[in-house]
Image 1: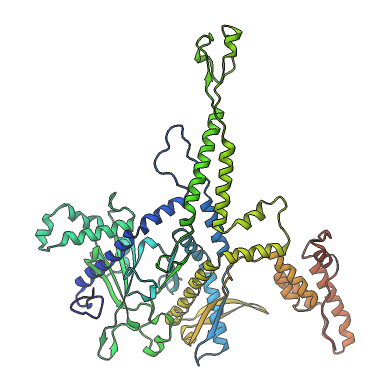
Image 2: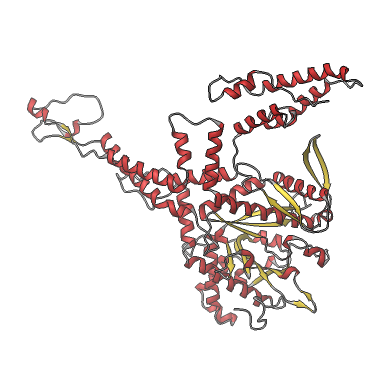
Length: 619
């Protein structure tokens, strides 16, 4: 509930830092307790264990093999690779009167440059792995002044869902929350480095929670109810460190909580915090407030009107995307929820098959008492045994047992089929395991479209994550790019570079991402389409070489263009142009190896075997 001294705001005023810190940890404790009560932490820990192929708990009993074939990992890795196969395609559109086409084109180039130079595709892969494991992917986009040799750069932080919470706990959208918490353990040295004025006062959480063992400290400090406060702080620390009170906390680390809260306090007729967003950082269970400031995403040197045009002026810099949308929960759902029981049955079948295999490899021997052969004579070494009689020798044999492995194999096949059906990858598996693999580019494209259809919800959710990340990046660039930043890009004339400054980018614009642009595409189909378009005259030589991914194409194009000598008459240009066209045809013919003319590849064979016609403009 709101503080009584300031009933219209969630946190007390900054003038009382002790009350602010305690209030932050009280709200954090409520948010973390709600997640634990809903079983999210236990479920996420179980999913992480399954993803690491640790389905069995405890030690395997002697003689009982516990086997597993982790189809969950295969499904997750295939989904992650499919969703992150390509870099996204950005578009920037106008949303106001300011700016021109050059500004919007520069924003697109800047976004592509940042995505490549800051390895954002690898960050996206981590986020998608979190989403496919836990059902939720959380990112925080901040401006880090320590990057790029002190010049500063925008950084994307992949937030562990164990260390993220919202208030109120039942909030369904992160931007609708009253407060957002990012908690992480930091060493005392790192705390002192980041907050030199207050960080040196920080204590380790192990030292802080040691007060729980000595009730005399509470009486000495004269603080009633401190033990309850320490118990709440210990519960939060256990959730963050993953210990839950089962082992000892690190001696040199403390839990730092960064609380982003909406605070609409006013200083006269002006808002105290830009965009109504306040950021409070505390540690030691709220005993120490490291910083209490206005929206860190807004440059304080910008005017109010100019700052209000940036995307993060009134938004939290957090993005939450779900693997499977759950309309009743912010945390979404994971495919693991639907597949873990089938995975367990598959593991049981494999364990039973392994048990039967071991029994077949090491069967027991029936040795009659009157055989005349000691039990010690039966071993794996070469030797001779001498039964008492021929009848006694006939009684020595292996113990037979029921062989029902065929039934187990049949059941295992049923479970695998069900797993692939529920996972939505049955068609892809059938194409891979077929006796005659599908290689026609149209069939490959059809399979990719089918896979995209099954993942449509995931594509939509992760495209939104990429779009929000790009918009937050542009907002930080508008605020904090105070110096010229050189970016590189490619034009028709080749690689180029230009400087970019934040003031040049402060125009009303909106970045969007082409949905599905990160999905895989058939390279074979692209090459086929490029060859067909080149024949029809729809594309030129440069486009053809780019689609065929021909190495050294710039040098090749330069040599081809250099063979054409300028002339004032058409008749003088005819011969050089014919030579250039012939050279282009020969180069294009070498791009794809010759293919036998079967019905499935007849069109390709015709294009590769013969010269490709070059379009000639009339007149």
